[in-house]
Image (cartoon, rainbow, N blue to C red):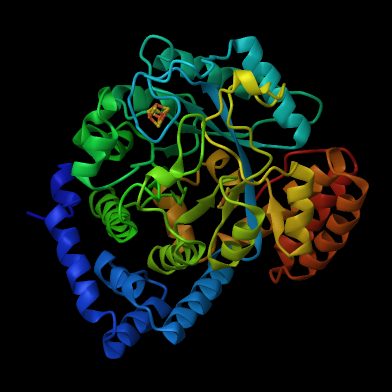
Length: 472
Ligand code: SF4
Ligand code: SF4
């Protein structure tokens, strides 16, 4: 029944295969010989299969877990260096016809404030985001064919790209909207989106159907096969994710890796990113009512294992996580984080009064973007606002090829420095500017290719002189 190349959800995410995998993992979780073999394979940086990675996830041997963490750190350093890309979500509309039991936007929630941004309001939100220094957004909208049809989403994307406020610009719009048709994905592609993101929520079909009792999202196969349709529609960067806390984490972990293997086997390109959100408190949602919550330690182990299993796939952590948790998992392989997020519709222009709450979930990390940038630099990370690949057409297999042979670092590192320089010039506080200037000086010295070093130094000088938007 399990067939990685099948186009049917229940065959490429076969329940039987996942259960067999979990059994195999349980049988081998104390088998040091097998574990060592898997770790040795992971050290080759070619990734792990869902079976191998599941054994490591089941393993409880402290020494081996530390070895996995060390390897994750090393792989992160080799593939991503010390840069962390920053983005912000932009909620366009919280009208939704689905019945997801873990999300306050579900149709039956009659007391949450329903909002949909007009194009003028989209503009105002984008200006507020640009004024913070953001260059990369992820747009979010509930599923509602009447209120949020594809034409509305496309119009919003056009508006977002059109806003040029002072030195600001949104250079990449990633899109997180409901599963849709090949035709609509092609329209999103034509609108110039970056990554199409769709969280699976859970790979367990039975749980999935219970958690999505009503609305079009109830259809497990249509949802799970969405990435194949997106790729058929021409979108070659897709982002996977599960909502940890809904189902047993080991099941989800095997499922998401099987999904990645499927995309690679069928389309020749694995997922561009994997997100690891955890269920959080929200309007009428209490995370304690779900039995599958995971501890911070398990969460860290999952992050480390995603890093070693799919080394060339970016990993995203949102402001759902606190500063402390973010500090714990950043070195284990996270490549992107959101900063200064508002999860309500229109929340960047105006903070909502309590009684008008339209937020999808409570944000744990409440700091401003300047505080986040400052914090990252103090930990020796380079905050990056880079959007270069998408704009240079380095997407899909072109991107993956560069990533797999590690050439992408020659672009990421100088691009991070140049976009950080723009941020410092245009938006940073005095203290952040000072720390940033020293960091850039230090990091320029670390560029080994003399030609790249010379050009990056020149570009950075040009940014000081008022010019913008340089990239490799
Ligand atoms: S998770 Fe998405 S589809 Fe489900 S209710 Fe919330 S907004 Fe709607
Ligand atoms: S160069 Fe490409 S991969 Fe690197 S940070 Fe920029 S957009 Fe991302």
